[in-house]
Image 1: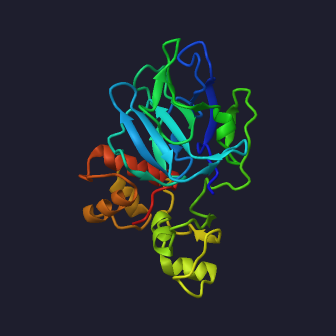
Image 2: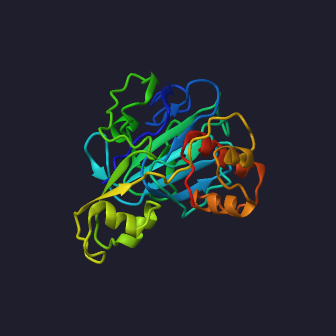
Image 3: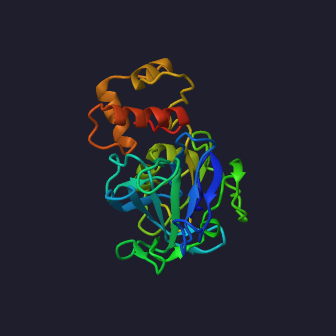
Length: 293
């Protein structure tokens, strides 16, 4: 079972729950990075995008595919609402986002002062329209839940402002998924093929890593090691603003067809080589989280 985790480089709470501004009566938090630049949010769990609302602040609702472990010990489905990303054109309803994968960014879309992410947690699956307007006129996620009670934080997160909350650190830190293994517990209906697809690995690799004798024989409750090694491109540390140049500098192919394959596995749909799409991939490459095809 995945631990729902707040995967950001920095923890900087700039507006607390039930704040006097846009959070009155709501349990949402505003989260910013180290400075005024735009930092990224990685998926707290493997989930499915249930709704995107672009008429206001580019709100996105992400629902966990399975039950997850909450920081307070609860085990249930979880829905996370984020808003203020300036561009969500690479996301679509029904899209699956893997835990630890960058999918959202700080921004100023909608009613916002300075780059940040408005983040709210709802207990359980996505329901109704996804939110409701409370008596103070503020829109809150359905079945709202305290963020610090829902989400673990990585052991190595840089804490600038905790907001005064008692955050719980995760003993399993998947922040650097490119160099760590994940443990997966087999569920009813699972097979090696769909598990391998979910984690961007191969059946043969699962068999080798777990010393499986019969690839058609796994059982519910079985713990499988999922190797994440070499699933991501080498982190790009240069200053180029060109994705092509960045790929070449780390000795990777950079053709249009190969970039199309990269875009596909990183959930960047309908790749046309636009500046927005290439910048998105370049930022993932700089973060060390650009998946290989």
